[in-house]
Structures are given as structure tokens and as C-alpha cells.
Length: 375
Image 1 (spheres, one colour):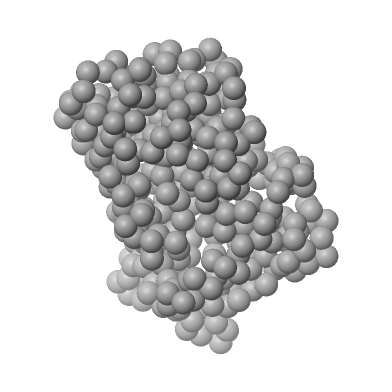
Image 2 (cartoon, one colour):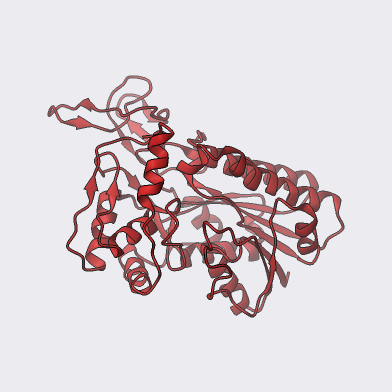
């Protein structure tokens, strides 16, 4: 396989993957609609000119078919991204993520093409809450919180932690493996779950190797700092660059798994080049939980601003408390391990962010969430 199609290849993760594939000698075609929310200035200046660029939308079967039929492998990254926004722009997310993937799969089943492998970008959001452990009940999976669970703990202080679904006792978060039951917490999460399941089903049915990669919280250069619906690290950077405090929901001690974009790219390439990855689902994370308020403090420190995180002690519907990756499967199957620590990655990110444009639109996004009754 030498000809690779990357849908969403002008985006954050996609553009880094394109660079690495070209460096390795692949011929790469980028298929991207340059959505204005992600690319307000149009074609980004970082797009590798050694690639072939096609401006097209995965919702257009005709345009997508022309690109697919020239490729020997497809990496499907194109998607509308934004957990909160997906809760009120429902049709847009379903059309972009589910119908777009349906078009791709329909082409792979019904058109003549040389495609021999498909990688699909899934998401940690499809788990909902991660895996936990209860001293009495063992491993448990709590339900999604529909409202703030602020019950007093033993010290009489507010407690945002979910309880055991069986005995209502205290539980502790564990690394979340791929066989954990899925409980999607947003329209976005549902669409990623459907993307993954449709692709794996069609792959197994027709003997086309498919790999689904469940990305955890990816951060790095090229993530839009003017898109308030993107990853939390980029949102914090945008706020801090504009001398405004990063806003943290709940008490800030909820945790996520932050992985450097270069490590994600390495995982994608490893899956493309190894038959051992075929028909598998992999977590792509570090396995290390980081508190959101700690991430906010690190961003402030790296940009050398005299700010403090604004802890809201308010709840966003659908937010999970803890979810971080169990990376055993991808390590045992492919020998993959992360190479970039959070400290190293954030230093590189801060260096890039100092010169990157950043229009802080967080207040606009926060207003929309409040108007829709989501906070």
C-alpha cells in the first residue's frame, strides 16, 4: 500500500499524519471540506504541499468516490467534533459523522477500488464514565450523571464523585480497557460509536481489514485556538493567551488522559503497516490520568501569566468524572508505547501557541450551553 487517502487531512491530527506518511514515502491525498469553524482562514498554511489536496465533503458521495477509488488505504478522520455542541446541532453531527461514514462504506462495498485497509478514528467519549472499582462489588461501571451529584462526603464537603451503581458506596477510577461497556454521553459520542461499529461490521463482512482507534484527549500544535468546541487544552490556551482565566467546571478534580499528537500519529502508522492490527479496536492514550484544574495551571505557568483557573463548581450535562486509557492491548499487540511526556508535550505546545492566532470564543460557547439548558 503506497497510496493513502486521509479524510479530514487538513485538520489537527490529520495534517500531522499526512506529514509523517509523506516522510515515509507514501503518496498521500487529503480530502477535507475546510469547515469554517476549524479553518476560518481557509486552506491552512501548514498543509504539506507534497500531498494532493481535494476540497470535498464526506457527505457528498460523488466527490468522495473519486478520491477513494484512487487509494490503497483510507484513514477516516473527517468528523464534526464537539461534545457540547453536538447536543443541539444534532442533524449536523449525524449527517457529518454517520452519513459521511455510511457514504465511505457504501463506496467500499459497491464501487471498484484498490483499497486494502481502512482506519477509523473513534473516541474515548463512547465509554461515558470509565471503569471503577468498589471494595464491596468489584469492578463497576457507573451510569452517566444527569445532574450535579454534590452530596456531602465523610468530611461534610461537596462530593462530585459517582457512587457504586450497586451498593452506592465509594468507588475509585481504574484504567478503562476496550471491553468496557459503552455508554455514549452525547450525540457526538453516539456518532463515533456508530462510525466504529459500522466500519468493523462492513470490514468483517467483506474481508476488508478495518482498525478502530479510540483516541483519548489529543493535544498539540495546529489544534484551532479559535474554536471553542475543540479540546480542553486548546480552549485553555486561547483563554490564557487573551489574559483570561481558564474556566473549569465542577471542582476541577475530574480527570482525563492527554496524549501528544505525535504519539497518536505513530499509533496510526503502526496500525496501517501491521496486519496484527486488522479488525481490532485500540485505545490510544497514555494510561495516566490528569486533573483538569492541574492542566489549567500548567498552561498558565507555561505561558507565564498571572492568572488562576476559574473553578465554577457547576455541572455540564453529559460530562464524565473520570476516564483514562488501559493501553495493554495496543502495547501487547503492536508494541506501541507513548514517547512524549505531558511536560515535554506542553512545552512544545506552549512554544507554538505563543505565535498562533487565538480568538477567545469561550463565552459564546458557554452562553449557548446555558441557553440550551446544558449547564
